[in-house]
Length: 268
Image 1 (cartoon, rainbow, N blue to C red):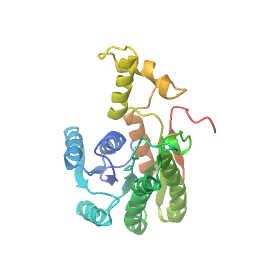
Image 2: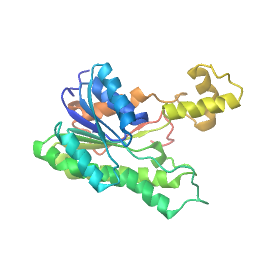
Image 3: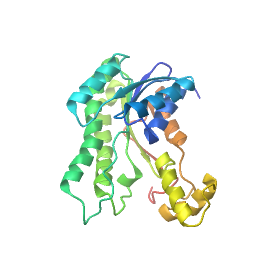
Image 4: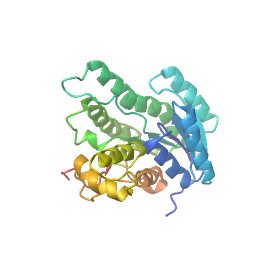
């Protein structure tokens, strides 16, 4: 299927590693000119080089999305290439490790800023041009934790849930002007970080270090999550979903939340 993304300029925040890097590579495969963003220039450059080796086009932009001055500088660098047609708000995360006995208000504010306000800043900056041209795509990366919050890291679940409401509001505001806004909520996805954790646990359970990923996954996944499909998701699967939502073929889809969770959420 031709997604007609050739020449579209896509800015993927937090794309120097993990899910963001996978999305950047996927959009580049579809012909988009990808702006790879991160706070670590060396990591972002490595992603750009891989995209270029694969025949794609990409550029590095850096900046802290919680700092207004750095956001402005980042956007100036992007505009030197062209106006943003596709914005993927992937940057975020949490401090990690907190629970309801240790969580602090300051951590909640920091997590909200890094996830929700970062996405708001970037979206607000690109929306006027998208509205002017009558075409644009904004895709916010949330998490299954927004709908199935675990006991730990409550700041992260709350922030990702806020992104769902933000996306729905923005979608209604921009729909008549050719701009769609959607959310993608990944479940358990195979990133370098997840694979390291799985292999660590597998070795603790007696699995040999050189075991295949399939052996490690079969041993460890049931300890972490009940996934009806029986495996973790691939970065390419997230990237393909984002590429479709970013394309003209998804022009009648807005305000939606697409779960990529292998059937984990136990509701309709």
